[in-house]
Length: 146
Ligand SMILES: [Ca+2]
Image (cartoon, rainbow, N blue to C red):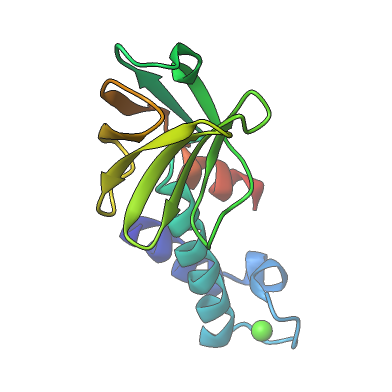
């Protein structure tokens, strides 16, 4: 992160890239442009701290909950992962991560971390272990996009 910002500062003051660096389009390249960029990076940072896919394993019932979940629409401002058209769902609410089975029940994991052992609560049994499958290589891709 620090290295990328340094690169950008070099970019900002390099005449060749002057127009490219004018992010807010006011004809000048200054710290305002860098501030906009930094803000975008911080937002990207937040999104990219979540993997695209999670895997659920364990001796659990219903066994349909086992498998790969794909990140989809956010729920309550947090990422959520879906399987089989949201029949199976990993989502967050008020300090608890839930692995829920539509119209059946759910497991839960207390705290901010979505990976770990989810405990059977209602309508399900066994301990469901959730792990991250793939983490986005965000910085490199974001940088090349520019
Ligand atoms: Ca500007």
